[in-house]
Structure formats: structure tokens, C-alpha cells
Length: 226
Picture: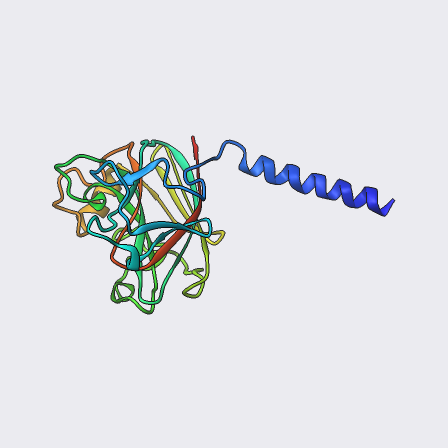
């Protein structure tokens, strides 16, 4: 009887996990860089290595082609994105979304919004308000800081639907705002992006993993289009 009950519990747990993941598709297969390329290029910079099921910006492997920000081959509009990240001590990176890839824009952050990935205490940017882990970079400060210690994996989520944006870090909702309305324009006007052409205006775009020159890892990257 106990074995039957245990089997039923296992089946229920598997079903619940399956339902929770329904509709999500992997953006990273854990083995290759298929589906990604370096921004404004067709290949992937040698600094990005697949190691132990993660995309690792390995500074020791950067060749002449460097690393560069990785972007998805596909663009996304409304979406729910999940990913895990960790950084080395004193490192800085970011998950950038609604990236418009075009040669006239020299970098992913020239058009895209960023959920900050950083060692809060070790990198100088961590001393700046709205530049800490989980913040909507330079725009909206996190309501709390549930970030894990440096070297440990963090679970992050970005949900964007009909202009409503929610950022989640380690299961905690840390940012909630509305994109593209009058208040959004005021937020952008008060940021470093105030005079940047077309910044934060694209409603579809690519997702990017930033090469900020520091060691960072990403894994379990999946997305559901909403």
C-alpha cells in the first residue's frame, strides 16, 4: 500500500512539473550555441563556451573574435522568460531584451532593456542605485534583493505581456512596471538613455546575454510566447 501511495505521489509531482513547464521552449540546449549568434555577426565569439550544461563567458578562451553579446536568432514580443545565472567575484553582466539588431546600433543595450546581473558588493556598478542585481537597469530599482551569494546560481524570470513588465528573482517579484506609456517615457527621460535614439521603444526584439568583460554563466534558458 505504501508503495502504491509513493508511486501516486511521484506521478502527481511529475504531472505538476510538466504542467508548469507547458508551453516553454528551450533557448539553449545545454550542449551547443545553436539558436544564438554574436550581435551584428553570424557566428559566436570564442569567449562563449558551453561547459557543464551552461553558457560560460570564459575570459581565458577569448580569441581574436572575442566574445561579444550573444543574441537569439529569433525575435520575441510578449513572452515569459526563465533563466539561471551566476557571476564570478567582481563581475558584471545582464540579460537584455527587446534588442533591435541593426548595424546602426552598435550594441544590444543601444535599444534593449536589461535585467541586471552583477556581484552587488564586488563590482563598482553595485554602488549605483538601479544598477544592482535584479534591477531594471538604470530605470527601476528592485523592491527587495533576494540575490544569492556570488558563485551560487540565481533563478530569474522576465514576463512581458501587453506592456506589463514583471521581473522575478529567486521566486520574488522585484520589479513591476508598464512599458511604453506616458509614465514609461518619464522614467526613460530620467535615465542615461534619455537622448538615445529609439531606446526602449521596440515592442519585439531579440534576447541577449551580455559580455561586459567579466566571467558569467547562464543555463536553463527557456521561453514561452504569450
